[in-house]
Each structure stands twice: as C-alpha cells, then as structure tokens.
Image (cartoon, rainbow, N blue to C red; front, top):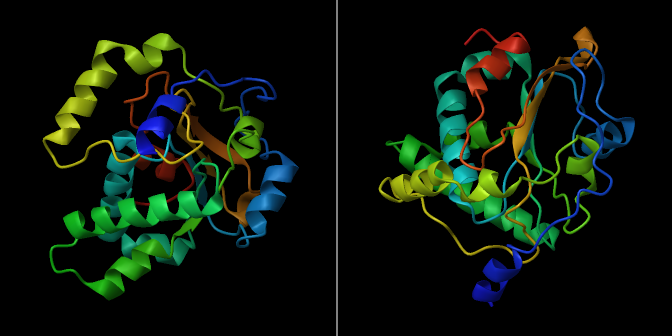
Length: 225
C-alpha cells in the first residue's frame, strides 16, 4: 500500500488555479483567511507553513527546528499570541493530522531531553493543523504555491541533504495517500490583527531541501527573539 503511495506521489501535479505571488503589505486571500479562522481567531503574529508531502524528511527537519525556536523563546511567543498554521496535504484530513502528530512527537523527544509534557503541550498549542486535501490543494494554490521543476526535486543537493538527514535519524516515512512530492513548500508571515493582518514576509524555496529562515520571518512580524 505504502509503496503504491510512494509511486503515485511522483506523478505530475497540476498548476491550474495557482494564484500570483503574494505581495508584501497586502492581506492574504479572504477565502483562505476565513477558512483558517474556522480553526482559531487570527489575532497575533502568524506563520502559515506549507510543508512538502506527508512522509518527506525535510518538513520533519523543519518542525524539529521550529520546535527548538519555540521552546527556547516560549515567553516571547506566548506574550505575542503568536500562532502557526500547518497546511499538510493528503487524501484525508486524518492522514494529515496523523503525520503532524508523528513528526511533532519526534521533534519533542529530540529537543526536550527532560521529556517535560507540560512544556511540550505549550509548544504544541502554537500549532493549528489545517488539512489542505489532495489533489485540489486549494489553500496552497490560493497562496501561490504550485509545483517544483525537475531540478527542484532531483538535483544533487536535495538528494544529498536527504541522505545526510538520515544520519541524524530523520528519514523518509511512509508517504500518505494523495500526498505529492512535486508540490512547493514554504512559509508566509502575517502581522498581528492590531497591525492590519498583512503579509510581512514570504519564503517559497525553489528546491525541495531548502529550509526557510524562520528567525528572519518571525522578526519581520515583530518578535524579539
């Protein structure tokens, strides 16, 4: 079953419906904002994270690093009411949530040597998982995230970085049904409601292995970390 999902994840994905690049200083599309606010009110500085396919090692690396940043700066993030929306894509919402729970638990175990369950929950409370069901992936497309070209996925650096991650214990997991390896990843930072809830920073890497500059993004929305 998972071998089939891995093979299907390599099928070409459509760029139909991908919106133009978001502009700094403008708001995100209203339909996306409304959908996100069904989960929680957007009030403090916000990051929208569009990960690669469920099972890829690179978003797991990203969540390890995000966990460390949040854990080391809990007071700053809590006082600012910061939040992170994660938009994984798979055929079912359950598969998206299961993937997040699995990689978050791995990140917590690696970054929290004391296994402080209270601290882990405080970090997890920043995250809101909003599944973006495959194959339509309407939220990511509305935020201008489409597909990678061939070199973005199969050039030397992505492949070598994936191999190097294996040495740290982060490796490919089973690909969730419906997840696609060709889809772009990245992050969008939005200012707090008091500052207009406008786009302050966008990162959309051209290569599958490239990690966003998390610290720069958070500083763009006013966090002193």
